[in-house]
Length: 347
Ligand SMILES: [Zn+2]
Image 1 (cartoon, protein in one colour):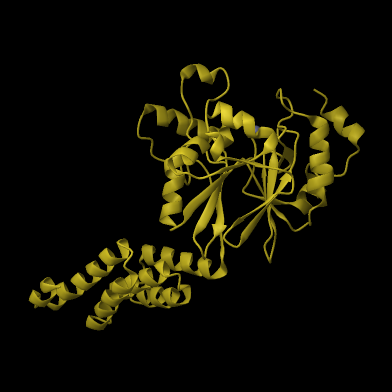
Image 2 (cartoon, rainbow, N blue to C red; image 1 turned 120 degrees about the vertical axis):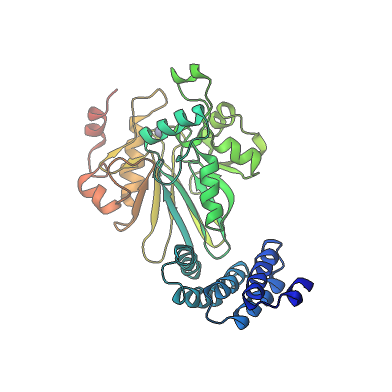
């Protein structure tokens, strides 16, 4: 700290305390980082940055109540600062405990291609309108990514920006637009591989949670190491911190399609993959589809969920979400006999 002693200039002294706090924080030396942040605040109590530094340390210590106070103080001295606003909102989310993001290609990721191949992949993602989800515990900062495909670097960057650690990759079903890998004919001839669960399994060492009936297809077609595949049964539950993910096997669109129910105190969430969309259901005309199984999945399993359950589908086909009540009233959860259903969906 000789540099500090030599610094006669107050402004330089404050900046040095601020920079030292940042450097200690990056090295994981939290008590030293807090000490420097406090020195910065004492040296110049009217400077927003000092409080921001202490807030960042409290956030890393997971003392979210103290972090909230410091971010609020920092914001009161720098009202238009978007970074402080974003960090304050992350802190309030941490106090609540639930982390949830719905990501859309072209809006949240698949934004800036680095080469001609990526340009083609991002452009396809925007046409397909796949939703990718991040779900986790905002206190422990752990999250899983649901249906990771198209732009793994972009998905990772969002998690990192939110100070979340990716601890798993969840797959609603094996189709390449939800998992990455080789696209179906005729696009397979182009030799383009879409990034997805393989990159997360191999480079980030996170397990791939997938229903047992779709597991082998993903393992082989995406070349995922078998040790990274966690095969799930119907009614499996996994924990991400204190957040529970309940898996419901909903075959029909594929043999191993699954929906993920996340119980919340105010309103349960259902990630419905390509099983249930707003006003429709996933395609039933592909080789692996089963209209009879889809009838049971929709009419017996999903239709029996509470009306208030908010449904987040696997594609943006007309909006970000719906509810079980709305789909029972005007969508594909409307009561129908199996005979009528099969007549309507006979292939
Ligand atoms: Zn699909």
